[in-house]
Image (tube, rainbow, N blue to C red):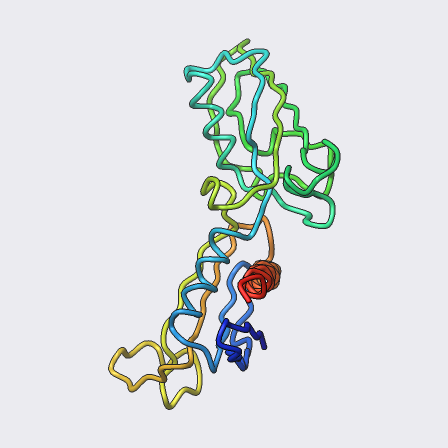
Length: 232
């Protein structure tokens, strides 16, 4: 439940009922009852764009003897999902030292071989590439790739490479029993109840994505309430 006071001394209260419907691997389905479509879309947008994750932001190339320009290789590494520990890292705005805002990677490989995301060696064993088999570039016999990379914590509003996954929702059927009821679109819907689907890219679990999104939304409501108080 969240309450925000407006300048007319009224209180707007949202009483939400949340229920997990399916939680398998990188997919989560849950229902929320007692909210408007505006609130539902706000939750979706916060999950996609404001939940922070780690992603490679800068690369220093020592050697790049692949057929690709440095910029192309850097772009590919930037899109590699990295497991994120939000208890250990902060955004640059909130962090106090480089140790809490940056994560260093190194890579040194020699051909003939395909360079994969798993060739990135992290200084933090908890924060490594989610998938180690993403192909980056091919090295011919005797050719090398040597680099140092820096990952930072940011969110999808800054760049979509920081987005933790996707989220979408549908109105809940009036006679809802299971997710199978959604297969047929010809059903009567509840205007204040929605079924959400979250698919994680792997940096965070789906539950973490939802939990952090609620924290972000709560902070925004608190900030909004303080600004309203100043208007009195």
